[in-house]
Image 1 (cartoon, helix red, strand yellow):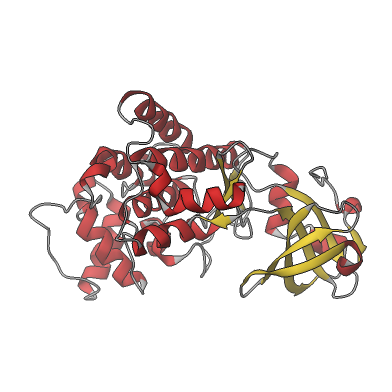
Image 2 (image 1 turned 90 degrees about the vertical axis):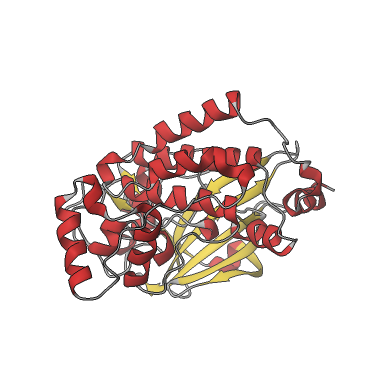
Length: 344
């Protein structure tokens, strides 16, 4: 089964999902639709992920207005992006259907397993290689003028290959946005709250690729700590966490952020204080090699954050100079145990 890149609405067809794919089980359900595991009837033994959207699609023209369609139509495939094989309108339900590459798990699952096993830290080599691959996929998205806007562990897929390696795939492009699109207004829901950048919380400026860099940095931090760094339940709590770890933004000469932040302070959103010393972001000593690197991606000012490509190159340098492969015997980790189960 080959991947398909649709360039115009004339290539969007209507057909029956159940006549072309045998649905096996649910993978996940969300407010916008469902993801299921299925087998192709045309290519027996070929297993895929089927994403169906609940909203009805009246015509191919309506289909082409979907963010996910726009992404797959304009961003070429990449080893670190979940591949799309086919897109069509389900003739039975009139809903949009995306036939996607199937993975073995998402990144949150091994994080939870490691946390529950002791906790058992993920070794520095695995943290670095996983994050590097996420950054390479993110850089590819940015190269073609898009921003993902919802990078989080649940949207990072892991696929165990026959040669024993693990392939990292960024998935779920339903909130992706073209950077040169006419609308630059902030929407009420962009990104899961724990991974939102301060400019998203404060609705300052326009969408930029720096949003994704912030989110990837928090994913890396979660790989190190096995818990989210900024688990706020509201925007106010999120800002408080950010101040706790990064200090007040007026230290960085950000007049627009400073004004908005001071308004939040005057409204009693969080205490007027400046910590005498900022706490460490990485909680385990073995991950302190990443401390300054993660902070680069968590700059208050979006323009001060490196690009995803620059951060990937820096991690590659760390892998070549400071981080040794298998610094902790990987065969003892839950991630490797699961990988070995799939390779049997």
